[in-house]
Length: 145
Image (cartoon, rainbow, N blue to C red; front, side):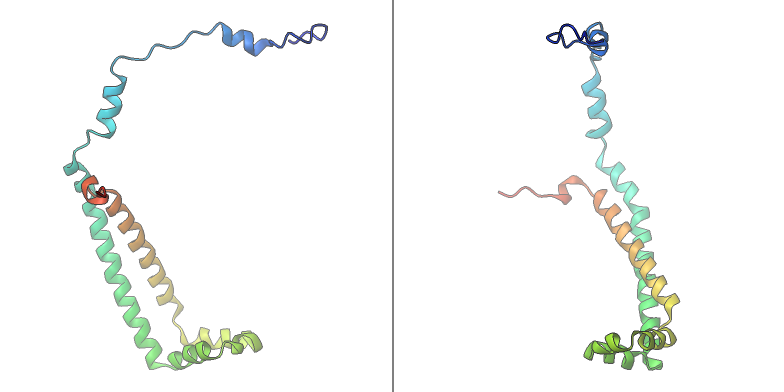
């Protein structure tokens, strides 16, 4: 505790406790172990882990293509394209009667396909990020000369 009668003394219990501690010795092979766990990983091992993400990305791309096609077919078969075109031409429709516009969009847009397309796009982005992070370091960045 700090002595209130001697304000120059600022040492407290924690300082006295840490004064008795000794430094821990660093193991001799610490650097070698850290490098073995990080840098010494082979490029072939990193490439092996990229294959499942590549397959997941291709599957997500295929699903996104199919849902986009089905969404386009559905919008072309109904009045959905005309409604979306009208909204892009005149955004004041959304300001004057937002409830009517949302109700009309709800009738012509298949929201299940929109959600499925969004999920597959998210999976595609996730898979692409994992593939890029597992690419060999020589392909990720090239030093500029």
